[in-house]
Image (tube, rainbow, N blue to C red; front, side):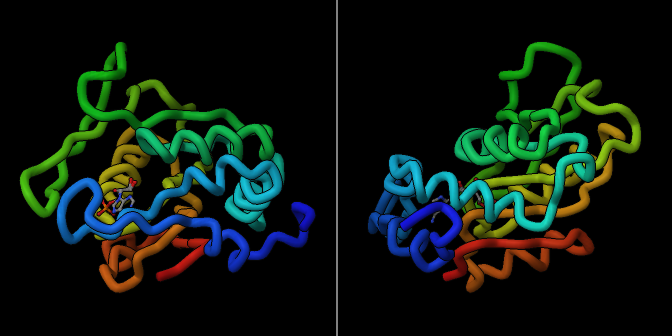
Length: 178
Ligand code: AMP
């Protein structure tokens, strides 16, 4: 199988489902077998970049932590910058923060206030779309920092959680849908 021929279904076959991790009832989608395969990892990045060409995206934004793996590689392919969105308390300079609710409790993520030049065109990437809370908060941080989200791309989407609805009106694309 070469990179060009690896389809989303080849990628899907390599995702390992781990029941009851990190807590009972969660079906954890383990992407490490995809990352460990040079052909599948390359295909995954190519497909996440999708229709975008160098010159159309100024920055690829990745969400802490697995989003970094995909977003940094996509940024290189698009010859764009990479901007991290991190968990609260990790970025060293002035930040904007956004809190969102989880099933139990809440979480806060942050971006550097000077991450973008005003109007920068952003491709936002994360590994997995579940309820959409994380990506919605991330998109809102990108907007707050003065850039525009052209698209939000995920390797995996758990469509039965309807996370997509939380991301309106941003265009959303995902490679493997459960
Ligand atoms: P959410 O905010 O509910 O859309 O959750 C998305 C974030 O949680 C992503 O950054 C994922 O890495 C992680 N996540 C949620 N559910 C799963 C799952 N079933 N398997 C792996 N990661 C998950």
